[in-house]
Length: 176
Image 1 (cartoon, rainbow, N blue to C red):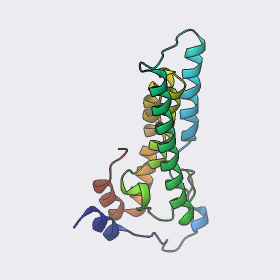
Image 2 (image 1 turned 30 degrees about the horizontal axis):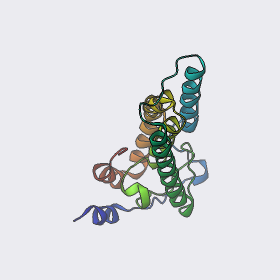
Image 3 (image 1 turned 90 degrees about the horizontal axis):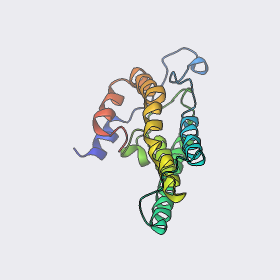
Image 4 (image 1 turned 135 degrees about the vertical axis):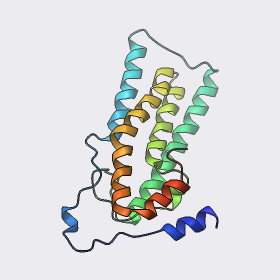
């Protein structure tokens, strides 16, 4: 069975067996992940203004073009992931309940397309604005998001969806 067949096989919609669905909480995420990336971006800008500039080591047109491509790719991934969330009535806010697993679109290739997308955007902005700090700080930002958001999200989804989610974990990469 190919990956598409396995994903279709493990597609499963959670239906609460009694209880108040409105009272359900989502993942135990306590800090908005996009703010981690914003803070990292601002730290990169501050390093540049503090005299610690670190230019991108490629010709300027290459940095700008490469940066714009990454920003566009990141935005496209985020928009595709968000459109699948909207179609299934879900919120991208990680502490809100997840009514069903999304296995289509970018979720076929990465379990965290929005975090991949925002990481690409930050790297792209660093390249486009010739500030390597911004690009380099995207990696520690993703590491922080991994521990404050991805780990609690995966714990929540595993507890809620059980075996179908564990099957998905074996079929789709965490990031890339």
